[in-house]
Image 1: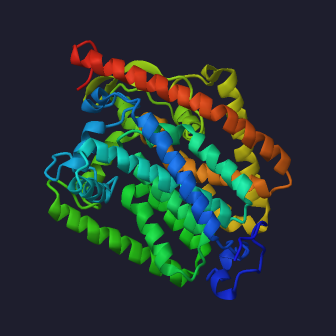
Image 2: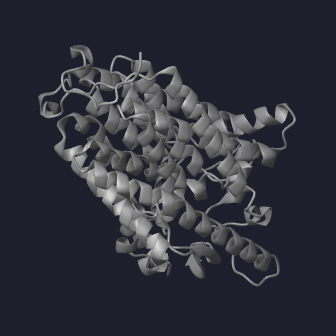
Length: 449
């Protein structure tokens, strides 16, 4: 069956899928996902291959010297993450509170690649490319599940791949490609799956929890809005139990890996709060963090090199946290304008068009939670941009179904035409700056370890 090219029609879904299970959700009409065709899957695979090639190209632009030290590239921790992915007995297998199953799943993938003769660092590059491919392909399928025609679906997918968070974080050995991928998968399930496919909802919810604890908010929000109460409870319990069971196995199998609800690990997370970091002398501004949480997933200002105090001493790093928006320049400014129009149109459509609410409400809830959370957690908001990018771009895509479609189309074309240029240039600049810092550290001319 060919997918519909119109958005879901209220009442088109059968009663089993459409019931909310609670009267307080009756203001959300039933949502009928469009059926995916073989063509959709083939195009998604092609899109994924293109995205993987882009990421491999960007990955090659980062000098391996950057991976030998901490905090250079927007405070990323490549030594820890690479150790997690390559060494079972690593002493760095201790961030399981934030990333419940990243260690065991990532290590298993890299070891499996090693079994067929792929060197560890090459395996990590392949893993990043594979996660980029899955993310881009799943995003296209999410757009088609909304009932969007192929051309605009490709357009919003191109905007997603052109965004700053995708070009930066899918190319860098960190946890964010994995966590971003699971958010995209959950959004695809939200857009494409019917409420009766409980195993798929449980898989998506568990995936959203597995890579980053706070990302479970998208799994919970999507499930509670789209499923009846009894099904929501089943999905949530199965998802939590699955992650807990694998976390226990990880705790026993990997040296220094903690159970993801370990109270010691949970208590330690407060050290990453803005107020706590400010006490240590770090710069922190909730206004800058909130602004960057909403802007930098799509477009980043010029990176700069600074030396900042941290709980482990001063570090010289690349950052964009306090760079003024005026640094965007003409091209970046046009990208920012297009982004504002897309988000505004998508939010308006998600709220005002009844049959889009079952998609839009979970997206808005997730974005709002993430923006509020990273206003007070973390020093550089861009570090977490890959988590919110899929939801923000999916929300922007809902504007396609609004009466302002012509304005949305113009903003989408403007975004695609300017974002790729601006964001790729910023990525190359950040990679070059990071390389210089890494060399300076080896010579004792920069701070950090």
